[in-house]
Image (spheres, rainbow, N blue to C red):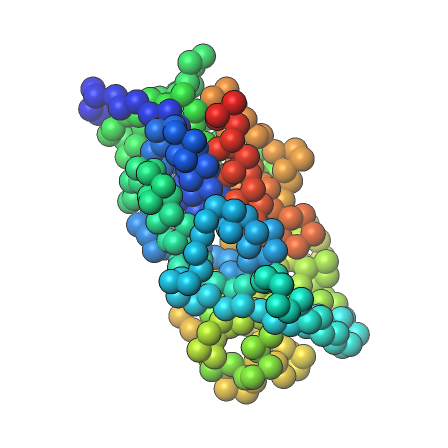
Length: 316
Ligand SMILES: Cc1cc2nc3c(=O)[nH]c(=O)nc-3n(C[C@H](O)[C@H](O)[C@H](O)COP(=O)(O)OP(=O)(O)OC[C@H]3O[C@@H](n4cnc5c(N)ncnc54)[C@H](O)[C@@H]3O)c2cc1C
């Protein structure tokens, strides 16, 4: 362990949407900010890749320019399929800004992190936070069990399993996620998959399946179930094996749709009302604050919002 201790105003742990939004906000206000992520960007995140109106408006507020972002797919219509098989098309407002976009997280998160760098945030990739000691004046954080950083405020934007929360001994059994969701990229999809589709399949309720459009005849396809609901988490692999062949879903994806690469699954935390949001000089944001929408499981907009709020809080 090095004896040298660096000092910054704010240390952000995690470079997803929550961490980047925190860093951009605090850096622009004149704070010295170091953001550390264990991954090297661009990196994937198991996600539906759907940007809702909240995420789009907050992205604009942060100054995110979508023009150079690869895979940025605006959505024109959303089609909702009921358990009885009825389908309803909802055209999104035209000519008045965007209301829904799909973009691979690999591209989106890298663009946000790049925006943080441009704002002046120092970013360290490929190094994990492995320790944290808090005291009355701030926190001392250990990175890769080697270097130490002293910060007046630490913002834990380290995702669903939040190592910072775990190291501080604040994790509970309730931190395994309220939803559990699968995702796979699919290529060669049919023309109907150019719209955003949500299927409320009877056996998955209150969960749902989705197909979110991407450029080049691709789609992000997946489904989520409520943990503790009628579908056991252990049964989701079997459901995934036959989901794409359900007639309602196959008719949209088309007969020639090809699953790419491997499928991924990840929990979604949705209990911000009873999550630990702060601990001395440590603030929790995004999935680390279980801030996703309890009804839909969407969390990118909520990650941006809680990140911006944390960035503003360190200025107070
Ligand atoms: C299958 C699925 C589908 C979803 N679909 C959607 C959707 O369509 N739309 C939507 O809005 N939301 C969706 N969500 C939710 C969304 O993915 C999350 O809410 C969002 O990623 C939260 O962002 P975040 O910045 O808090 O965390 P993350 O994006 O998880 O980022 C956390 C970062 O912390 C880093 N990290 C972790 N540990 C350490 C450490 N020890 N040291 C340093 N860095 C560390 C990680 O490398 C990572 O980069 C979905 C989730 C799932 C599982």
